[in-house]
Length: 242
Ligand SMILES: [Zn+2]
Ligand SMILES: [Zn+2]
Image (cartoon, rainbow, N blue to C red; front, side):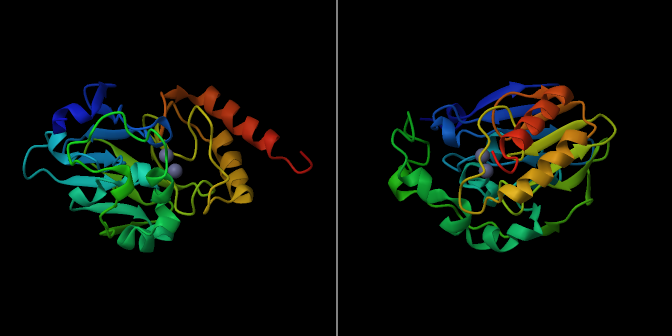
């Protein structure tokens, strides 16, 4: 398959595109986002790395690009190494530098049946799958701000799904990129690196967060009331004694 055909793209607005890998098993089919800014572009999450992502974004040469990984899981960081300026949370900095299976959970992909429905441009097979290391060039922490000129994004540390999970919130418009901390569909809190108690604190925070639209790590976007509903459902389902 040609590199260009590997990705699907949805224009959410004239500035925001959601990118996906339709030939990847749904468990590993994550959202990537490209925000076109005035002074710099923002790319959030990087899929499986089975094709070259950067060349498909058509970013003018010389324009700065902030590549932000919401967390170090395999379905979000495959093409992270293609970008020069790489940002992620301090809790996963070591993992980005080495990409060990214990943190990326890439072994789950290698053994997934029907992992791919087409041969990727790189020719990579699931059995031989490897993630190139992508050391962070900027280490993020809660409250850091990423400024692309006409918009800025505040980093929210949202651990529980993974130790270094982050979200990016444009406080002016309420646009929220939530990674795998919250999305519509089955949330994951039972893999190595997950922490249910910590995840509950994140959900309590999210249930109070003022947002307009949420773009999650998987699935379609949703609004504030739906986010509150998902967060409350999680808190109910994991309450002590249940
Ligand atoms: Zn994840
Ligand atoms: Zn994911």
